[in-house]
Image (cartoon, rainbow, N blue to C red; front, side):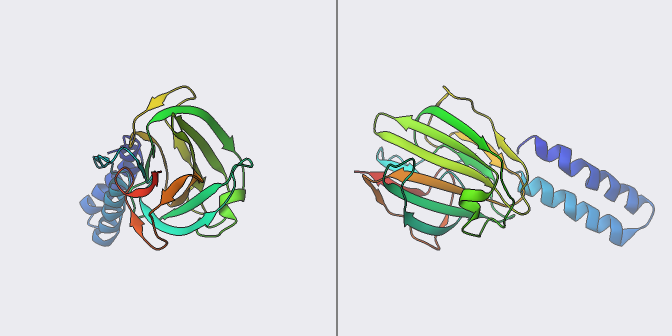
Length: 203
């Protein structure tokens, strides 16, 4: 459980208990369900990355929306976009082991996370992870509902594959950019789990 969850869940839970004590059963029940859902949203399950040393794993839970060939800063590669619903785990993880060589926070709009323009125009946090095999870049992207991006790492930090790096609150999107010399194995429409599902492999 992410500790912020207790802060957000406490008000509806306390109000729900108070409503039940006043015999406002329906209101109390709704508030308690809301508090329970908030705790569910902030869950943080333990994940074990695959043993395959060539695997590049998903940085987020969700559904793969698109896989396209796309250059990043002039370098050819692939972009995989993952949509996170409010029912998915929202903790984000490093797709590879390496060192964080860049973190860029970009202000922007709050289009629905499923829209294509959200990748370029929405508020986002761009994280660069570099290893001896190359650089992988992933974006924490705010959506129409999600308005708070959290990053728990700083430039220079070393990360292991699958290590927690941050989260996005209440529905969002994560894009990952992979350099051209990788084999993409994920498929559009596939549901992936952060820290365990393999998106691609180093050749």
